[in-house]
Image 1: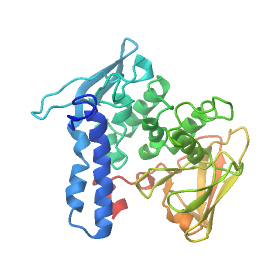
Image 2: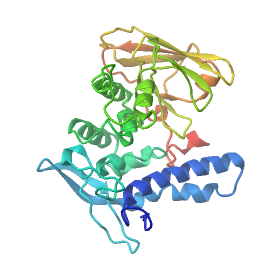
Image 3: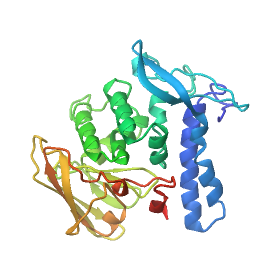
Image 4: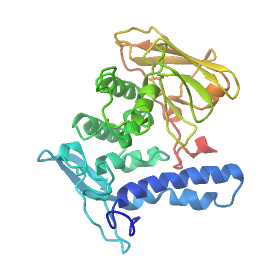
Length: 334
């Protein structure tokens, strides 16, 4: 419902901007709470504006057939009536590209399919809206398996790990191992898209970090990282999604505290047959949550992941899933 009446593409990018501004407002509400400002409620309410563009009966035709899924974001006018954008437009599967100056549309450099998943602050509400955890996983699988997902552009990154929010962290591990090293590798064409000042490299690094060290990088949060890890950040939140590192062990030293955090894979094998976390220990005590906070780095904790060849029930319980702002999981943000 946001319009660009001055820039390129009059009235374009309404879907992209609505979901991105909604997350911006959530982050502003978090900052306001920390500063003790009275604008917290205002911005938190605005962070739900993405739902205004959800059209429950909208369907998507893919390769000439109905995808089998209903409910997609669509452009909506101020008077409440709906516009239309094909959910696969602006993506490789439709052989179209949408930017500011070429083919301006309601999404920017990505599809409605992809932007539907961009609710980083309230994935629990999105899951409910799409029919529950099983249907959410089914839609995510279709998104990645059908070729709609484009790993060479930033909007797709978080979708690789969103299975965590549905209680299926093992599937996030499977997806990351599908994309790496297939699309991220050490060949001259080893990045699937424009690196955009480090976007592709950052995705690869956060997905893989282990004992095979490329470099030590100082991040914006003041920690030195030995590149490649199994903790993928939901940027803007104190949330890192846990998957097994691609290597046997990793250590991270916080520049702020000078403490070193460690992740160790037990039963690690180089063929990645043991791809699934069976259990975890945090500082020697059982840890069942499939995510962890930034304190892991600053306090120098140790996370030990026991791996196996089959998906387990680790990290699958509702209380072990990452936080969302919706009523069912709001406790995580208190």
